[in-house]
Each structure stands twice: as C-alpha cells, then as structure tokens.
Amino acid sequence: MPRIPPELCARCKGYKRLCGLPTCPILERFRSQLRATLKVDATTAEGYTPPSALVGEHDYPRVSVYYMLPPGEGAEEARYHDAPSLWVERRESLHNIIRLRSSMVAARLRVDARSPQSLYDKEFLYASVSVAPVDSEVELARPPTPRLIFDGISKPVGPSGPARRIRVTGNPRLHPRLEKLVWDEATASTAIVELYRSGVDVYTIHRALSLGMLGRPRNRRLVPTRWAITAVDDTISRWLRSALRDRPSIDTIEVYRAEYLGNRFTIILYPGSGWFEWVEVWHPAGLWTRRAREPSAWRVAEDPLGRATDVDGGFSAARLAVLESLYRRGRVADVIILREITPSYYAPVGNWHIRETVRRALAGSPVRFDDLNDAVGEALASLETPEAQRAALKASPLLRGVRRSRLTDYWPELG
Image 1 (spheres, rainbow, N blue to C red):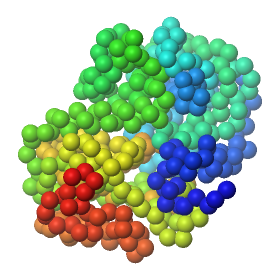
Image 2 (cartoon, rainbow, N blue to C red; image 1 turned 45 degrees about the horizontal axis):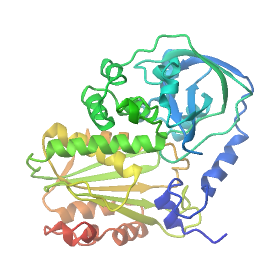
Image 3 (tube, rainbow, N blue to C red; image 1 turned 90 degrees about the vertical axis):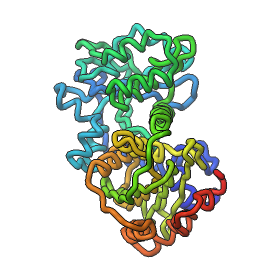
Image 4 (cartoon, one colour; image 1 turned 60 degrees about the vertical axis):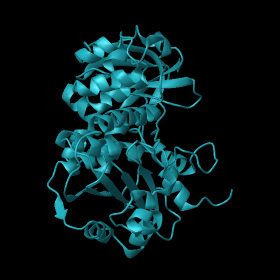
C-alpha cells in the first residue's frame, strides 16, 4: 500500500476517505487497541439512557441504529455520559470521556433508512430525544462486542450487540415544540430552525433529524448521525446568517482564546461583512499525523453567502458557535478561526468539543487590537512552534497577506 501523506489524513480525519481506502487504517488500529480493554459479557442491561442514540452509515440505506445506556446507573449519573456542555464546563479529560462512552452498552437494530415510520411505535425512539434521562432495559441476542466505534465527528459508541428487545420503563418527555413537529408537515430545515429558536439544544436536534423524526412525513429518512450533525449545524448557521444580513458590522478587532482536549482555538473577529477563514494546524505524532515530520495545515474559506471552499464538520461546528455569538450581539464580522491540534488529542471523540470550546471562548472577554496585522501576528505567535506558524501561513493566503483590501484578493476561488 502506498504511503498516505499526513496532510491528507489531517484533512480527512478518517471520514472523507480521501485516500481511497474503504476504511481508515488509523481508526481501525485505534479500535483494535481498545477492544481488549472492554469486557462486557452480560446480555441484559438496565439503566437510564442519558438520552443517547446514534445512526450508523455502513451499508446505507440498511443502517444500524444504536440505543445506549450505562447499566445500573441512576438518572443523573447516566445524563453525564452524554453531556458535552458539562464536560467542557468541568474540563473533563479525554481519558474520562472515552471511559464514559465505553461504559455504555449499545443495543443495535438494523433498519431501512427509507422507512423511519417503522420506528414510530417504538418507545425508545422518543426516549432518545427526551428532555431528561429515561429508565430502560435492553436484552441483546448475544453478549455485546467489546469495541469502541469512532468516526471523527460524533461521540464514540461503546460495546454493542444486536437487540432482542428494548423496553422503556420510564416516561419520555419531549420538548413541546418537538412533540408537535414529529407529526407536522414542516420541512426538515423549517423544523430544525423552529426547534433551535424554541430553545431545544442542538444535540437533541441532531438526534431527532438522525432518527427520522423531522421533515415532511413522506420525505423522511433515517440520517446517519455524522451527516445529521453537519446538516443541523449548517441549517442553523444559514438561518443565523440570514438574520444578520442587514445588521451593522462590529467596529473593533477582537481576539478570543480557549483550549480543551489538546485543541487550542484563537478566534479573531474584525469589521467586515461575514467572511470566514478556518485554519487547522496538526502537530507531528498526533492521531492523524503519526508519520509526519513537520506540522500539517489546511483551511476552509467561506464567503458571506455561505459558499465554502470545502465541506468540514469541524468548521461547521465552530462557525455555528461564532454566528450564535454575533446573533446575540446583532452584529456581523469577518472571522478567522485558528485551531491548533497537539498530540495530546489522541482519540477522535466528536466535533462537539469544537462547538463547545468556541462557545466558551466567545463567552469570555476579548483582547482588543487597533490593527488586524497585530491581531493575526499575536494569533500566529501563540502557535507552539515556528514550524506550526509556517504551516499556517502556507495554508492561508489571508494570513500571509492581511490588509484591509478586497477579501477576494485572498479567496480567489470564491470571488
């Protein structure tokens, strides 16, 4: 097999399959290393779902639906097994997050994605989008397979086995707006925005779309969770962009920073009409860059109309967090997001940590600058090594030549 360039791995993160291989060898190696550490042999598990559910994409449209619960745990303990905002708030470690996810048993069903209605009489469907943990019991056809499933975007799934029976003994409680939309004729995009505006958190909306609960009934499908996450983030971002279209620009240059799980974020907001620049810098010896000798970097650029140079779930998660902050302020801005990934980020636990860390950064107080060059210079100087700085500059024409001129000088592919 030819050697795969680390730069390609950093861009792919195991889910775009840019190397042409049917599965990611890095993720497969990581899974195999963890299989021996998980020993689950019971076929019946009782406990509360956090709630937590996932739809796989393998063999689409014949997909696997996973219903997850940590055996023997009460409601509040179970909730913490799928609680991204709390994990960030409490600075939960990567090791503990993997432990939390790996201690949940997943009952697996095989379902035709084109027939989500086959699940509508199943209580576990509604338990999966409940506003609170729901007492449940799963009986598996055989002991669950001791392995973790990673895909780089959604949270990992612990030991799983084919479901013989899933019994919900508690009472699922849905947000009133979601309960209405499950039986409504609204389009999926309209439903997503309605739920978001009603205060439903994005993680519940991800699950609702993934489980085929949104959209016009005749058009509904089960959506693999990885796809649903990016679709929901992008749909809400389009609505936020539209709501900000006629709003004034910010009039200062602001820099925000945050770090979590070995990922460092620097967000620069400056006067403009809504351009985004996303630059990732991966250090050698990391998850996707084990064979690299130097840092690897790549970028996504997006214009104010939402036309992007690439599709990336991490960028979608970060952009949503930024647009939420700008929407609360009633202002638009041009945005540069610099993400630095260190080797201590050794497992792909999902894009939730990008969304939540950027949210947390923007909730803090910024450092203000009078000149964009100074702000960019400060951001680049915060990178760990001179080699990382050079990689970022090589990837981004904007960072190489920041000046207050037409931004299409730096994004010619969007001009």
